[in-house]
Length: 392
Length: 112
Image (cartoon, each protein chain N blue to C red):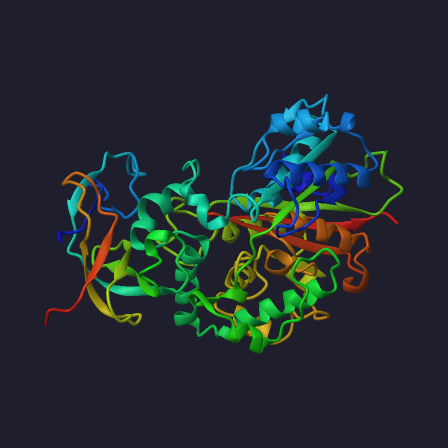
């Protein structure tokens, strides 16, 4: 069987989110936000916990056992974890779809939850048990040189890109400003104060070349989706997001961010062509893109590696206005990790589905029929999913 | 200050900045000294300390140095920031033993 044979076999039929907050609520944990999102996603799909027979638990936070016990999932027979850091949620869509296609499960729940404000912050993750290659690299090799957080790890790549290609600060700022404009139109976004380019350029340095407004936020957020067969008779009457293509990959030197033969290679460099081929469409066919935006530069880098523009051209691409609200490729129409919340990128999947169902209200991309979601993880792991509207 | 040591594959002659159990070609790795000479490939300046330990140090520059032997290594800079392309020499600021690859590096300021 080829990957193309799996094109269109499965669909996202339910999406859900926890409240997106930064403090002010007691008892918020990684588990609680994952549970809230799961309950909402099942309700959105018109299904019950008893219908769930497949589960892809998140790579950190709630365990499969906690999800099963707290949600009352009595029938799970397929359960597999996907571990590519922040690229995991988008990658998980493909594993869920594959399980459905293989007949291993009929209804797969894919939740994430991270109390990244009330609980463990991003910059403290490398000090946690070094269970991932990212944490091992930071703890063992980068931290002795003053590099502890994702912003510090990735800033080296951003700075080199600026040096080689002249990528200006204004291009990073344009990403932040566009994303905020979308958040203003998104009721559950945390950061909804309008932002101008001058605000971005005046914000304080975190780690050069990243300013405060280049960085995603610490938040408490959970998001979840439900995947079934595309032709599942329980859902044929309703618009849904069919998974036409997907792929995930690790870069060729997966242990170390800085020693790849091609310095700007990420997992997406190989995953994106595979996903486009599987879906039978390309970047120019997309009505929108939800791009994992841990920092503004990573959006630019992924636009290049996913094939929306050539290497080194992403600065011109965004400054030309293509990715502005109402442009030909609106990006992160919900406000992303920068301005909505850090639900590990599953909020990008939720938004893609809402856009394809034409339920996005004032931020709706007119007539959206095809969209793409990417994930970015750890030392540059990449994932991508191409989704298509089907149904009335 | 001591010479920088990194893992090296005696068979395919690759150097590794990030320590591992064996070379991808299947050969056990040895730890050997490198020249320490290289060029600043990229650089960042941290303004917000991410740990207590670095709170008194900000702002500070961390450079990514491409060594003459090939691998790129991070190193702290004491003093004014260096531009990309600068030729530098790095040393091991916290040697942990002859058989252990270096992890904490410092850019040696020019002695002219």
